[in-house]
Amino acid sequence: MSLTVTSLASGSSGNALLARCGDDALLVDCGIALRTLEGLLRYQQLEPRRIRALVLTHEHGDHTLSAAALARRYGIPVVCNGPTREAMGAELAGLPVELLPVGELAAIGPFELRSFRVSHDAADPVGYRIAAAGATVAIAVDLGSWDEATVAALCGADLLVVEANHDRELLRASPYPWAIQERIFGPFGHLDNVQCGELLSRACDGPCDVWLAHLSEQTNTPRVAAAGVRRVLSMAGVAGPRLGVLPRRSPRGPAAAPTWRSEERMLVQQSMF
Ligand SMILES: [Zn+2]
Ligand SMILES: [Zn+2]
Image (cartoon, rainbow, N blue to C red; front, side):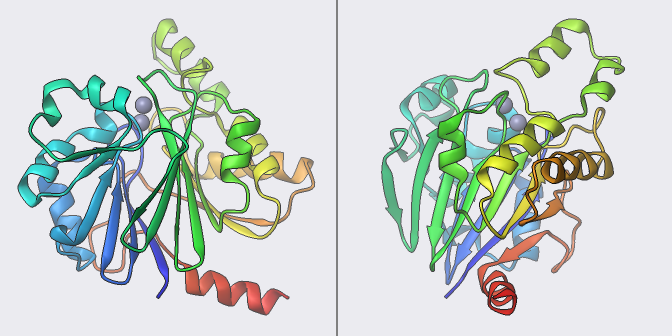
């Protein structure tokens, strides 16, 4: 058994991340149209009913667009905290919702799941640490700042999925109105490439894989994000992380979506030591 993580979508036009172990799966966020998601799951050869839970980070539409529709059509339980459920209002009415208070451990099939609070302008936004088959993925997207608790929540994970939303200069030069720029820059907005690099330089205490996530289409590019994060890591003398950048929408095709497999990571580690 191994842990496999696949990004189906990442960014302000929608987020969906799949964690699989054996025949079981968890979906973290469901911010794309249901038909699109069903198509992407077909490419992954995953029957939607095998998703054991739909786990929500927060109530914003780019994370929840078709959450209720997916849960209703396939009878998939939604896992989130109380304030997030309340913020979603009638959308989740009548659906199976399992409340997971921040910081508590949940066992769902082969997965162990724990949320941690992040700083973002939503009711009670969280990231997640998901462990299965001896491997761990930690996910922190949509956060405007980080603190020691964020570092602790990410530390030691084999795969870190962390937001690198924008480049500061590209955001200042963008046509976004000032108020929106201030919201994105603010402590409850989104991490820029430098902040992401600073967080990773603290959280990556050894070899690990990193996916830079939730890139802005207008104010970042994969190349700018990777270069910006690498610069900060090298200034901090941190050489462990291997960086990848998530596309906004995974290309259609059986093997096209970015996928991380714990057994390959283990192999890399064995050959390194
Ligand atoms: Zn978002
Ligand atoms: Zn958000």
